[in-house]
Structures are given as C-alpha cells and as structure tokens.
Image 1 (spheres, rainbow, N blue to C red):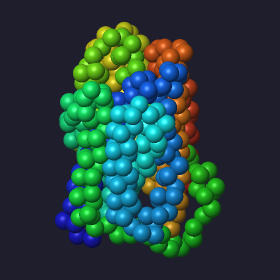
Image 2 (cartoon, rainbow, N blue to C red):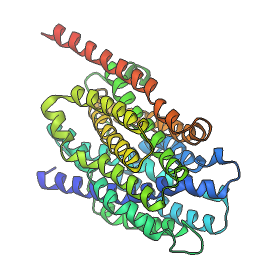
Image 3 (cartoon, one colour):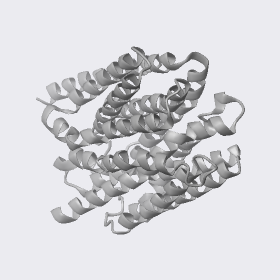
Image 4 (spheres, rainbow, N blue to C red):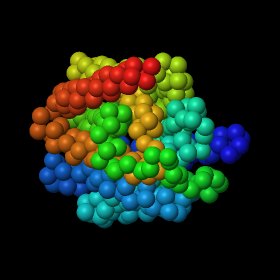
Length: 397
C-alpha cells in the first residue's frame, strides 16, 4: 500500500471516529439522566449505559470474526447502521416514556460502539510497523471533532422535540451515525488476513498467558472501566449538586477533549520514551484525577477531575493498544483482538453497572476511591511485563 493510500485511510478512520463519538457522547451525557427520568428505582438509572457497554462487549468477538470474512468496510457499515437505528429507537422510546425500549436502543448503540473499536486496528493493518503507535493516535484524534461539537450539539438539540426532553438529542445522533457511512464507503483496507507464520498459530490460552498480553489488556481495560465508572456518575453527581445541564455538557466536553487531544502527541511520546513510560504516567494521572475530585464539589473540581481522567484514559488506552501488537503473530490477529476488545468492554460494562448503584448508595467519593484497587492490579501486571522483558532481552544478548 502506498504512503498516500495509508495516510488517506488513517484520515478517513479518524473522521469515522469523530462521527461515532458524537453518538457516544450523547449517550453518555443523557442516558443516565433519561434513565433517572423514566425509571422509578433510581438504582437503575445508569442501566441503559450498562446495557450499551454490555452490547459492545458481547459483539466484539463476533464482529472481529465477521470482519475477518467480509472485510473492515462492511463491518463498519453494519455498525453505523446500528447507530442510526439506536438513535431513532431512543428518541421514540423517550417520547413514549418507555424505559425498556430505551434500553433496547442502547443495545444497538453498543453494537455500533463495538465496530468503532476496530477503527484503530484497521489503521494498524494499513500502515508500516514503525508508524503503528502514531496511526492509533491519529485515528483517536477524530475524537477532537466530537469533543468540540458533540456535547454542545447534544445540549442544543435536547429540546428539539419539545415538550419531550432529550429525545431531540438522540434523533440528531441517529442522523450523525448515518453520516458516518460516507467516509466508511471510501475506505480501502485489505481484508484482515491471518497470514501464515513459520511457528504456526498458538492456542488462545497460550497467547493470553504472555506478560505482554496481560499488561496490554489490563491497561486498556482499566482505562475504559475506570473512565466509564467516573464519567457515567458525573452527570448524576452534578445534577445532585444542582448544576444546570449546560454545565454538565461543558464538563463532558472538556473531558472528551482531554481524551483525544493528547493523541496529537501520544504516539510520538511512545515512539520517543517507550510505551512503559506512558503507561505509568497514565496510572499516575488517574490517581491525581481522583484526588482532584475528592477535594470539593465545585464546577472546577468536576472539570479538572474529568480533564485529568481523559488524559489518563488516552495514555493507558493508546499504550495498551500499542503493547498488544507484541502479543500476537499475523495468524493470531483476529482472535487476539476480539478477546482484547471483549475484556476491555466487559470492564466498561462493569464500570457502568457499578456507577449508578455506587453513587446512589455511597456517593461521589466512593466512585473515585473505587479506582484504587484496579490501578494497583494494572501496575502489578505492567511491572511483571517489564521484568520479564528485561530478562528476555538479557538472555537474547
């Protein structure tokens, strides 16, 4: 593939990422509030977000295997179609005050989000080996677009179908998902093939026992699980503190910007300082984010904590994705990526399930303290990988 072609693919995938995240941001900003509005038992307020992430987790492996057979472009078109259906169903469910139908709509949104997780792997398959970390970063840069317009668009359109609140935002999300099909149609990515290697394909259990796989997956899963845990609870916490929805939208906007703006330089930082330095930095930023949130409940606290949370997510997610490429051979790609995505979104689903209950039972502080044990486990796995890598390099010399 020519340099011009793979750069065009990365650019198109970045656009796809931006469109998809507008829908995701709308769901994260309003799904918990819609749940709170539609369900009597407030412990289930974040159930729609949890169902979305469960749908994402359950679809990751089947979608990986499907795209191996039919190609990335067809898989991505299926995803964007699901996003359009999700937005339309969600808008209708809100107008009918139907909580169950709204949850079904979020399941379709989960299917869409499952396909979008393969944008970065599609970029990896399109570029030379020395461009991998930067390709992942550039694809994630599409999130900057969604950060700039997503929350503002969601807040501005929430009363579009007045007097029913929030329905308009999901109707707009349906349209944005439909628009995502345009850049997808121009992608030219080789069908994911599992080229033969001299050693042959290993059993999945053997791949998963590797320190590189364990560290990569734990870093990516922790980044998503903890980010979803805190971000899902944020609109509920801000509502409880009597902040207007415009403030909530602004905080989410800053958070999403912080998630994706670092992608301008994360790949370069990994290339220069190594993936481990970025992973350890991301873990430290998660701790600082929690500390900032625990110091008060002013708008500055919510904004600062969510900005730090976004940067922490970026470092661990990009770093984990980069590290994962060390764990599989070409003929092990589809199953390894599928398992990775399943674990990552199982963690995200757990975070979203736990978020509403933890907040309503124990409060905002408990949500932030809940990050600590998972960061400890991720740190231990990364140190184990680092130690094994040093031993391996010493033996090779």
